[in-house]
Image (cartoon, rainbow, N blue to C red; front, side, top):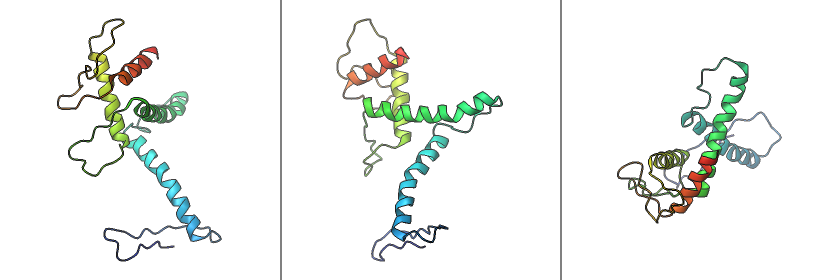
Length: 157
């Protein structure tokens, strides 16, 4: 089956979807492909960004735990960004509307570095924008309370 866009759309391509299921309607095949695509992107991100599958383990127990641990780290990164993330648009992303997994990973890394090297006092509640940026030139988040909550959750673990 060949899926073709209308000829008047610029910048389009014609993906060839191959299936052995001859009884399924073309629309259902396209739906399956679209549903599967987000899974493929998640697996690719897990391999490229989190290094899932790159560990050199030999013991059976560690081999069985490495990939699930990497996928768990990816899930926790997404959850932490959803709960406490502050997406700041970089100047070179003029049309980007949603953060990528790499953006979430970088943001969490910056928050963890900032939390680790920040001087804190017991029972001290930081003022808004008082958490310094982990990297120079990176804008500070607008809501520091969520980072404080995230830091407390990380310390509890």
